[in-house]
Length: 188
Image 1 (cartoon, rainbow, N blue to C red):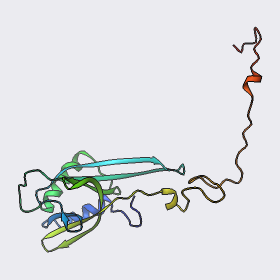
Image 2: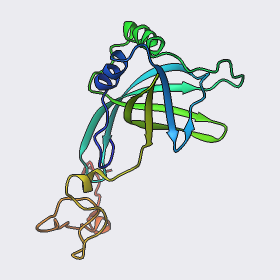
Image 3: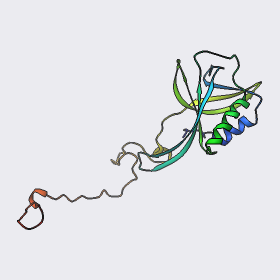
Image 4: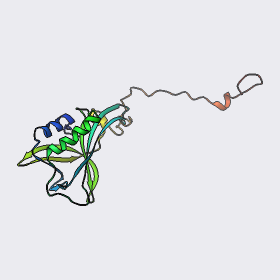
């Protein structure tokens, strides 16, 4: 999930498209860098994520990933209309029920920009365009996000573990001294 910003869910992303079907859909992936107008939406993936973080807490969420592809041969001067993107969404949703609360990510890369998944930071209607401004994803520690800690504290507590009042004592047994087998005892 996004750090310090609420991630856009599929329902809100799709609603922004539905409200602007006649606009041209543009994606800005970095300052003054745009996905080429000849892009295709190659697939929409739904990824259920289940993880255990460094503090031992089970986490789960769903991501809806829209993959964009720039063909080598540029075939158009104008990006697709939002209505065309919605027709692709309709085909996908006829076969795959997308989680309306799933976190939206846009997957994109080209020869100058390594493929990565980014969040739609904002969607702005500007003139004839519907501009989706993308922001990168960052790794983060969920234990810190829960108010925990990551690392070792001054008192020596372990990374992300709940504070223990007393460490458990382990009794060691000398197995070599205890290993006395006599005939018929059933130990061998």
